[in-house]
Image (cartoon, rainbow, N blue to C red):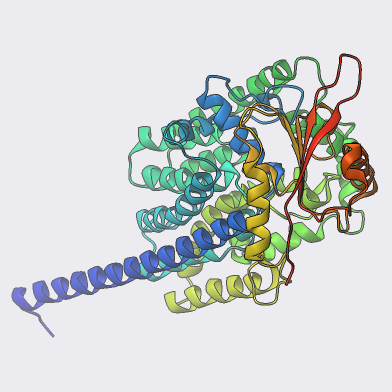
Length: 499
């Protein structure tokens, strides 16, 4: 049947209107999902802060070093005998310094992490649309990112800047796909500022650019990433340690105590040794679980290959949370998996209907979330909500500590005391501290209990005959004459009523 010009033109307008409607509807879904995600994690993170369920490692570490940087002491920390740059290269933390000038602190870090992690889903949607994925598939990809259980594990464990690198990574792919090459290169290279390990994400971005035909920019990104990482890991970080050995190297005793690029070089030279270790029982299961959370990425093998170096390094670690991809240790691989997922969706959409592809990726992600996420209904809950009276008692004890005092505090109390130059995790360095803060000794290790008993023995004689005060305690240690150990000059006990 022959169509007139008006009929044919009207059909084109109808298709455009339907496409626009689908895109608008998908954007609404993504925005709603982001709003729910950000709201949930803001509430959960700030509740953990309020109930004192955050930790010295790593919230207090980041809070202190940013506070020090805001006061002109670049990346200084008392949690290591050397500058923090000797452990990790994360200059992106400088972006938080103006917030600290305005009086911000750990709560701002937790809020920014939840917000930026959520906004990354919008950038992923835009990247998917730039790759000409159907709006339904683009929205599905964004939602699966928000549901990723390994992203949840990182968000549930304090603050880590690498949790936020997904936003510039997804924006870089969108820029490459849209022909904004300089912006794409700048965003891809900005990932190197989040952590030295982010080189694997940057190389994945170079691979994505090459897949899109941007070979020269891809080569430039890969070259700069590798050269800068060699400089950072091979010179800057050892120089910052000033002769001290890296405590992170102890996690790679199976690789001769090597870490970073030297560990990768060792694996390249001795692949049989790495395979032998990975073949040990329990080594590969976490990696299989990670891939099983997004199995469709295997349909984009070249992009999925970028997961291999990061997975190998984590699985070879002797540090249990790192080896099992718990806490924040897999979060850098989440955006790589999401990017590979976009290319896999393009391939799937060529042979399957769009609704089927969307249902496939959403269903598998929901199942993985239920099985692996720390906020899944099936997950065991951690510490219970802090009793209001208990939290108030601890806050009263903390308020007694002068802002310039050196403190040795229990891990969950340290984030409340990080805005000072000298802070240690009890029982570490407690004899050098002016104040010791301990909330509970229930279930603590032997060295903790022994140190706590030593603190109690230093209570002035006038207080020893009294009933042992309930915890939490804040003990002020006054410096004795030179060459003598500090003695307890004052003990302040805040009574806790446990309901």
